[in-house]
Length: 361
Image 1 (cartoon, rainbow, N blue to C red):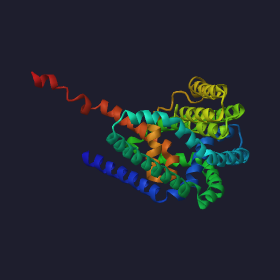
Image 2 (image 1 turned 120 degrees about the vertical axis):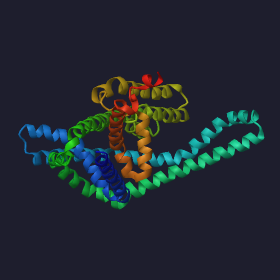
Image 3 (image 1 turned 90 degrees about the vertical axis):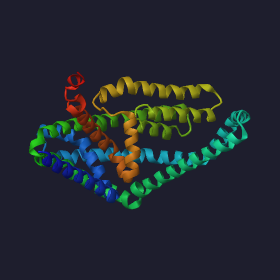
Image 4 (image 1 turned 30 degrees about the vertical axis):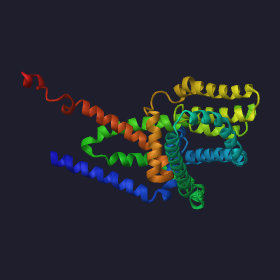
């Protein structure tokens, strides 16, 4: 029995290692297929609903994908020119913002300098410079990885031409693929694996579908109202903070800090600054008490810190494709981790042999 368990352990460990190596070596090539799989997973319930109404699956897939990509392309054509203009304008204004912050912080830095010894100032200044250099280097590496892994011309062309084809075939054959994978499960553990896969699917569906809708709604809300207030780069800041709201509180917090800072530098009146703050407080309140409970519910089970760690870790390991796969992999690891912990708590490794009291006597 022990030999069988060891063989299974090494078999699955080898499979996981081979998959990770494959992803590491061919991550850039897999980008359009990963995005296509995400699109297929997102749209599969809609296609299933149309198929139940008597529409042939191939026709339903073609119609839904055509509508989906039409909406995406229309949205990009509408938003991208505005975002591009705001982005380059922001780069032009960046030296002014840096100078403003430097002048704002100068008196406080002088007070701090007066209360510290010269040796401490030099030491902590060197430490801060080292951390700053490291942060700049890390940020530059991330930007470089994104460019080489996700935004290079070849990968961009593959997304445009290959991804829709991959999405079509994956969505058309989704049920067949699932049935084949189900038939490959080891017979002794098939029921347990199906249960865990069901939990993973529930977690992913709650995140991918529910949280995506929440992020899009918040991006539109923040972008519209910040632009209505007249905040410079309000559309760019609002959309960006909305899209990263899949990490609870992080998107609203970052948007609040950046938005109010820009408002303080732009407006001499405090009313627009207060309106920017109210916009983010309203958005966060709506997300916490209205959007997430109704669109997502309590099915995710992914802690915000775990999501953030997964994004950084898988992004560092596998580049831009790792960022795309971070949440699914985090969901899988989270579900399997809870399964292992529950099995451990029910085992003698946790409970012991039950003879502790007798041995003491």
